[in-house]
Image (cartoon, rainbow, N blue to C red; front, side, top):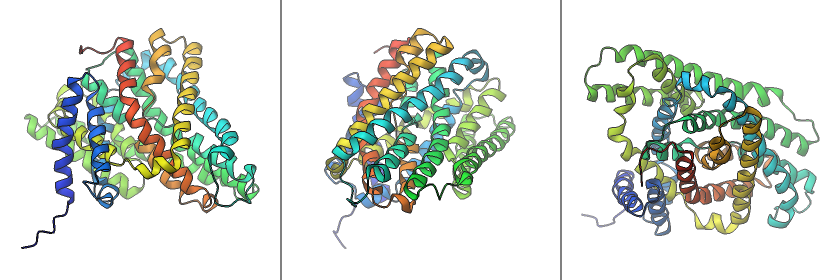
Length: 413
């Protein structure tokens, strides 16, 4: 019998669920969002090195895939078409302004500040040939907004109303905008580095369009199948199995096809909420496992905390957090003014757009695939990861603040 004890993936999941839930309970007691407790517990797990880094960055990624699939389905379920039509003008106008605001307000300052806060491996590279392309890509990635934290807080405080509807719709669109922005930004950046000889309109426009359209088509097909089959299901346990099975099927197919699983699952939720009149059970069955999903996902998110990343790229990460928020804040205010949005949307929406995570990290990983960024890819990726770590800590309270100030929260502290 060997006593060489080693944490395995199943044990790690158990720790995330049990210890994470305890952290969430403690957070609730002191009247901060539950997910803040999950994240802080995850950070402690990382600092104490309880779960090996290889597991966190490897096998446990399946938790992220499954959780984002469920979260995508629930986000899509919040996009009721009649409500979207009512606030459609505000959504359509605010989204491009807040996304473009983040891109501009990250790109320009980082291009000027980079020589003072970043050390490039190749000192022969000029600001034009290195820092500006880097800033363009970082700005493009900053367009994204993560739905997970926002949705968890919306559901915790049972928020419902015009602010919540607008927020969820813009978050969904932000992911699509970020994918397109990254494709354009990375091509422009590579062209700057290569002297405008390597620009590819196929990579810039067609590939992201295929990704987005493919995700929507896959989600729509599975959504209509789910709507049809659900008519024959009468018991909630069977309905839960059907809904989860469809979400898992969507994740697997999307990963196999190389398209966005979260966007595909958002489409499933969108189809279900708009095609089934009495749809409460289609989303209500998820309530039985919701806490487990959130505890696993956000505790794992906190466990990605890496002190070495903060040390090497903390300044860049902090700059990205601040500049992105400024861009979103200004963009929301301009868009809300032009669309004559409700005062609460204009004042507080930008706080709800604070979270970043899944899509942001996914796009950051793509940077390593570009040879043109080889001299700066490490600092770019670490800077983004540092911004995500900082964001995970401060975003939940700000999102809670926005939801309560908007008047959409039904549950009192």
